[in-house]
Image 1 (cartoon, one colour):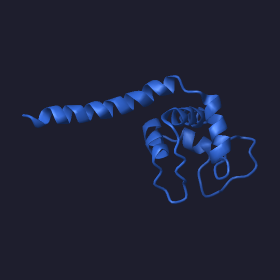
Image 2 (cartoon, rainbow, N blue to C red):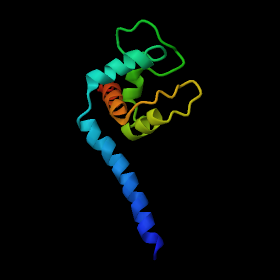
Image 3 (cartoon, rainbow, N blue to C red):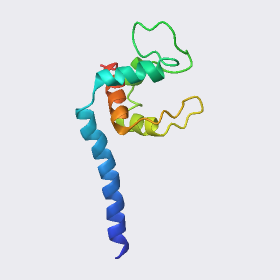
Length: 109
């Protein structure tokens, strides 16, 4: 029975992490997300409709934002610790990730 408090504490940490992104997305700054995207993502991804260059080997923000496969939780986890060899670890803060997610998701509407 003594392992139960440790288990509960672990789930409490997970719940707090998910809650932080859920609450953060309500206060997301999409304009800041656009600035981050243009600065860090536009070299490879098409991040704006009027953008002229990008790689054809990576999805556009419109494709990512409109995809059911890339939900907010999976994108947040990916951006916090990318595991793709072509994707750099940008070391974004949680706030920056939340802002970037808001911008990406705005393309899927």
